[in-house]
Amino acid sequence: MRHLIIAFVMVIISSPLTWAEDSVYEPVPKMEYPADNKWSAEKEALGKMLYFDPRLSGSNWISCATCHNPGLGWGDGLPRTIGDGQKELGRHAPTVINSGYFKVQMWDGRKKTLEDQAKGPIGAKGEMNQDYDELVRELKAIPGYVKQFVKVFGANSITMDNIAKAIATFERSVVSKNSSYDKYWAGDKSAMSKSAVNGMNLFFGKAKCSICHNGPVFTDSGFHNIGVKPAGPLKEDLGRYNQTKEDFDKGAFKTPGLRSISQSAPYMHNGTEATLEDVVEFYDRGGDVKENLSPFITPLGLTRQEKKDLVEFLKALDGEPIEVTYPDLP
Figure 1 (cartoon, rainbow, N blue to C red):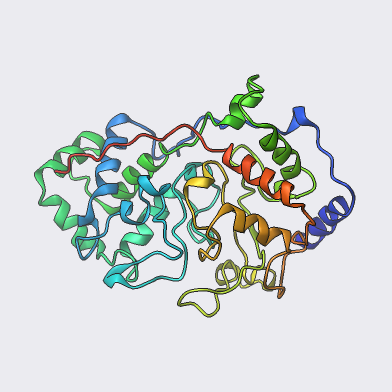
Figure 2: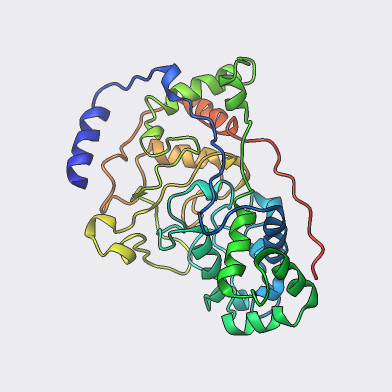
């Protein structure tokens, strides 16, 4: 089935691309919450405390916010994140922005929900390196947390599942919206520059970006090998293949969302591209590694001005500032 889909798309992209302006725009929808983890203000506030608390790590030095810092586009600004013991890991810390809309989590999609994802780094030896049972004992010994968990989940409710539910609830509040792009489609045609409008036309046309970066948060939640060169401690990273064991997925990684993308440099799963300009150059040359390359990735033949216009459009996807204050920890 996958090969049939690719063949169908290749027929489309082999011909000049056109798009109907009135059919492309999709606003950011209202956030949905799982049936077993409904939103409440108290739960979001508790999740915020836990997100910023370094006591969730085995060393008591690393919090969720260490690698997903609001001041760094909800990433860490590094090509590859630094984990427990100050060791460089193999992948770039993905931004939390709009992660509540993603169908799967992590670069290789190994976590299906935000709740599942919240647990992963806490217990991972290379990341926060915390023993789950020890963490539960530590939080039970903090009266302020006991009080908050009782308020949100009821008595005797400090468990890893509830810790993850609270953190995921807070992460779903991190939404990029009301960008210049949104204002443009709401009727303010002055919200985007002429260059950004040209970039938008390229994005949905000649540059073929929207084949994978589509929908309201500009991701298909799919996995593609786009030809990124190896970097960092991993000489080879098979990406999605580690989960599916399908040859098709070797070197494939999840399509990131693009809203507020200018805030979370560097780019790619291993941070090889430092700027948006570098990313556009990367796609224009058709990637760097050709082995198992997605058929969607081909040289684009963009002019210098077209490259500048694409970058201006990407910047027009920046939403309003996501304001967050550091919580008082119990």
